[in-house]
Image (cartoon, rainbow, N blue to C red; front, side, top):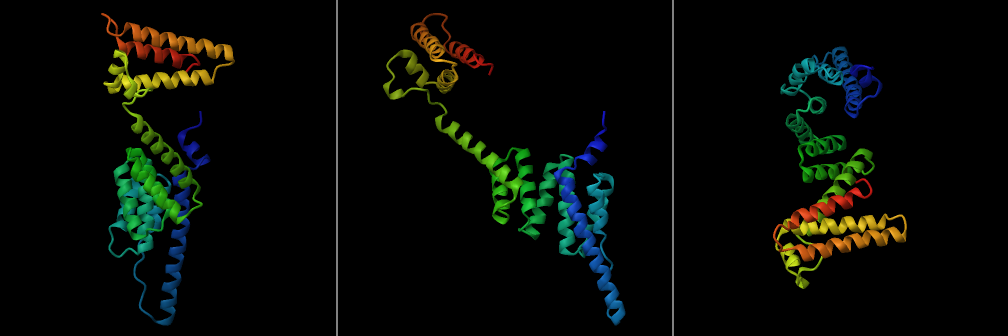
Length: 269
């Protein structure tokens, strides 16, 4: 069996790919600083200030080494002299590492601080959106995915995330809109069982689910004959429900639950 370390190396995660980008940027910063220091020394200018070692933070985070990354990144993030670009890189790197280790709240805090420093980071908005999603905060997640897309309309991951969560929110909204409403119009309810269903949210939801499940199996029937047979079963259930309601021992909730289970079992659902 391939060990987990080899697997991570062969199939890099999105977070590790982001670390590689950060390391490349860090290298450019270090080279720039060295060139500037050499230029000042050659012209007799002031000596360059000591460079904060952001590369150590980035490399430790990319290697998923929490023991090394924790002090290395803290040294950069907590230093008041750290240049803004390096501070952002360290925050993003540490945030991604924390997310990998399921320290969601701390990861969100780092990403949020990075976004305050530079609100044009589409990748970080998307990353924070995924963290909000892990916390179950779908409204905040969709806001962050949307922010990423406003910055970069072609951000593929943000597009996929935004589409998926928007559909989920739409589905939840649709469910809330019909919650507590049965499959029929309560204004026309005449039978005692219909009035009981209209007066009980749980009964109303069950009635609507039974109706929807029956409609599904009818659509998926292999032929017209099978569809007629399935509809007769539903009609028989309604007739037994109407006749049995109110009699000693009749359990309306159980009758609807049994019918729903039978419908959902017709095609293996």
